[in-house]
Length: 117
Image (cartoon, rainbow, N blue to C red):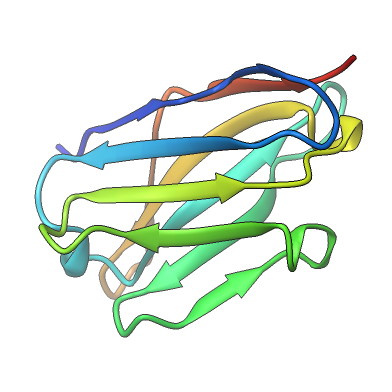
């Protein structure tokens, strides 16, 4: 069973930065893609940023130019660098891995990010 453990959430003022980390049991290069989703209260879970096995990245329009998804060379950690944070970025952020032909999704437990003055 794939396990994902997130860290790095917290409270930050508007304009500030945070970096989220997600450690995956096993190599992330085994997955179609890995990345981050978020869910604000009363809303659906939406894609934030993903990185494919080949290194291609994809971002939600709302975070382009502010967030960066990356992975480490050891191949088991995914990061989300978040800069110029806005109150509307407040949400629970979930790490995601997508596996195989059947595109099975695995999720972390979520980490809260709150942007407020």
